[in-house]
Image 1 (cartoon, rainbow, N blue to C red):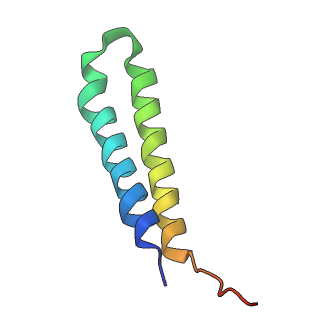
Image 2 (spheres, rainbow, N blue to C red):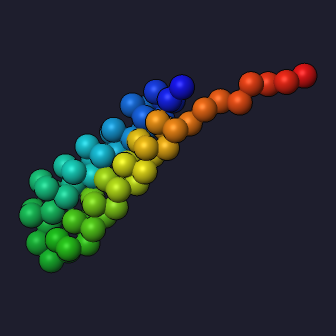
Length: 64
């Protein structure tokens, strides 16, 4: 069963935040535009990785 906490709680917000940084904030900063685009893209890529890992996460049953 996929983990909703990882997928919805972490992955999707990181994807959205990275997208917003790369698209809307980067044109406003001037000299460091390339760096801000890179950081926004990196945040988005890490969000996609966490989203996919949340889909494949399964909790092992505890055995006593």
